[in-house]
Length: 102
Image (cartoon, rainbow, N blue to C red; front, side, top):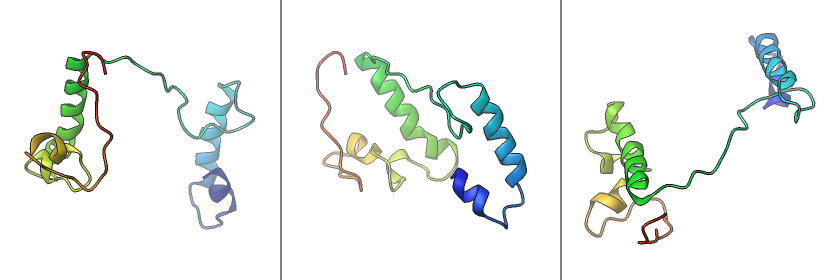
């Protein structure tokens, strides 16, 4: 993305974008120059009730945004796999363990 911004003569925000990416890059010692995205990924162990809560939140996002009236109507959602008996969405899902900790 950085190269695309630098090499695009039609990018009107080039200087502004590069300044922002460079500013954040200086704050992160693992970068040589630019920081394009956040590097704050960390694993969180979710108990089963927390997993369900997070899945419900994700499934409800298109509904809250007004794109669909029900979660299972969103084309690329896994909601149909969870909410509809014998439902199969567009995406292949890995089976989730039935243990108390996911």
